[in-house]
Length: 341
Ligand code: ADP
Ligand code: MG
Image (tube, rainbow, N blue to C red):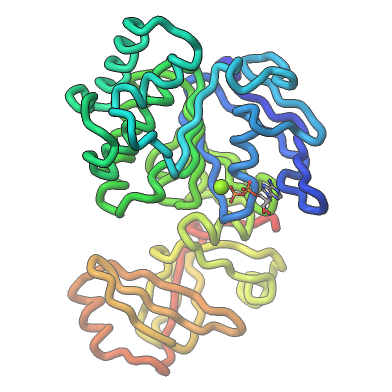
């Protein structure tokens, strides 16, 4: 598939701070690509470079195969939706959406027609005459989307666009955004620090950490095959078994990850099942979470988490189990993912 965006050894430095440190990756045309990472890891900087609000300190950035340096933001086939979508409060919705076209001196009839079309795309066809104050948070975010889509960019950049919405609305908007992406067929680059958001929407995810990319993979691969300690922990909070404990278990000084839901809690003294590993530890806490319960267990010098699906057996066990007790955790060798670093 053709490449929409390409970073080659891109650095962006602010004084002493390396916001991006030799980052290379590419986004395919039509892809839903997410940049996931904690606060300060370089996601927004990457997005601002794509938009043209910033320039690389070194390295190359290409858009649709062309060197981007020297192309002003308004000459790029790119538009951005921010978290604080900053609609003009005194303008109605239709004029808010049409504003960018007005600045570009598109004739009035045409810009209003395009603005109506953009509002229809985000499922707000009848709200053009309202002011932003007369809309809900979710509707305002849709207006911001329409405003970014009105000049039909080939690439849409979204910087934590749902961050200000409550959980339920956020989940609903995730579904809508994904549907919109399918309908438009353009490239979406989506910034978030929320791993579940990235997992639920993306074709591929780049995990950022301290200005570098730790791994780029599909949501499933990222979840099941994390390459590094950081990814294993940040995406789905896997248990990371450190080198020492790993050595005592299998004779290899290599850290590995096991998902919380793959750690079974079994009665103490039960022999290890075929192809399984066991550790014994001290139960620190049991937390009821609804569909599951979460057990925190101290093993050697680390804390492991086991997520047990809610069931009668788990219930029976939980009622006879208490903090301070010794318990045994077991997992299958198949569920161990070796980590590089
Ligand atoms: P993220 O979006 O992942 O939270 P950013 O890309 O905004 O991270 O920031 C990455 C790093 O660069 C942070 O340490 C941040 O403080 C720094 N940074 C970003 N923009 C500027 C700026 N304009 N001036 C100085 N430092 C900045
Ligand atoms: Mg940011």
